[in-house]
Length: 238
Image 1 (spheres, rainbow, N blue to C red):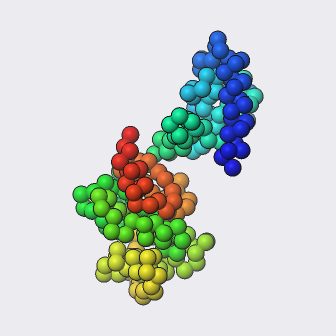
Image 2 (tube, rainbow, N blue to C red):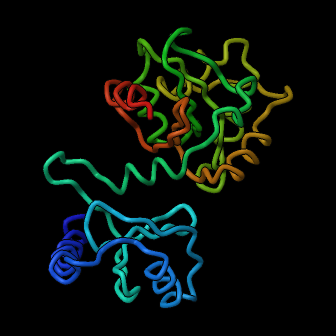
Image 3 (cartoon, rainbow, N blue to C red):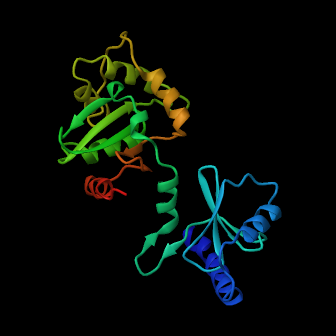
């Protein structure tokens, strides 16, 4: 899919490079022109990209690419072929940062290395990708994990019961490992849990899926990352 998206991107890049050699800067006039041509869109910000004549347009939590006339708009990812870096993914990660101070760490299950790099994980006990992530990071060194129980009952009807049983267990991390890594059934519940509060927090932060990971500097990422990939990502502080 990304290769298909890159074809029109490359065509536009070539057109921008050839047609806009003399005047490619993002002036107030260019900004106004782009906004007027797209008056039906709620545009938060417009900025230059690494490519002359191609501009990044931010709308909500998403970014798109547009030419100086505002007529041609692209949805896709921009890559640096020399460094193999996904520039769009890096920008999305940057603009969608979450303030670590907003996370109620007292409502998380804490595990891992007490002195390690911090990561918050929003997880669903019945989410297969969440379970894979737990398997990947079991016994991880150099990382301190704050796990927020975020059961998505619309997808996994029994996950809320399991989340409650995990939270009400004497050893919460051990219980979570039993359920998510060892696929064991545990009993329990009946205590006061922060699960409803975590669901409200996730809604405010725009977190809709699991597993969602948040680094200490606010970057957000999804998926069942291998342990080494997670550590490399956490180390890339910006």
